[in-house]
Image (cartoon, rainbow, N blue to C red; front, side, top):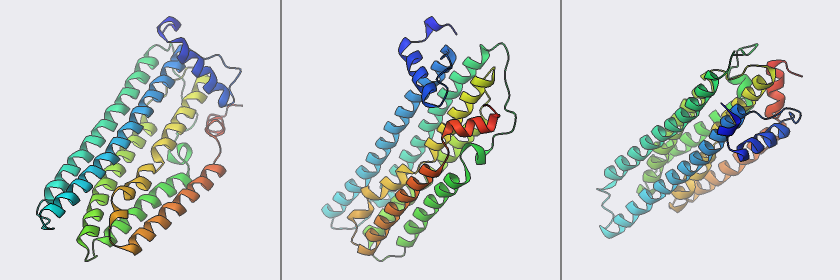
Length: 270
């Protein structure tokens, strides 16, 4: 992979990335620049995809509520709207898988250009890449959101039950997407030929895992459905849940070692 085939902007951004992770004395290579560039673009595409998903959930909910008012609250159309949302969730998971596949393809092509391949001195599991606090927080956030949604299914208010069904479908889809993406992060092969590139590989792996495990959509989904229901206690419970989980996430982030530190510890680099 020649430097002429890589944009100069990508090379410069790779240099900035290295400096930001304590590797300012390392010269950015075209291989690293290419890997970082595809991750930036994929991450942006993923964020747009999740935003589109939240908008789709909002449209399904508001469209159904509008139709309910027009037909006098019969609710006969709701199963169709749930099927539409299920299709949207499946499309989201497939699109995320395609984005991950794009990253893996670039990594494979980059690895094929290496004259030799380095290996991690130890197996990098989820404890190393993601960390126990972040993993526990992500699992607890999803579990808490699902428990609250399931609890609302027992309410007599049909609007609250419908919002809960939307949440459950959306949360299940997001959870599946997170598991699939984390599996890719943990299992994709190493692309490195020396200690420095090995450290950079681990840094990218850690950052990818942390990005995937951030429950942004879990915090956003209730806004487009729950807060329009008539159950005041449910709205208050969701507000408390979101605020407390955001504060907890901020504290975990502040106390978690930076990705560069984690990578150097995992590889034994200085």
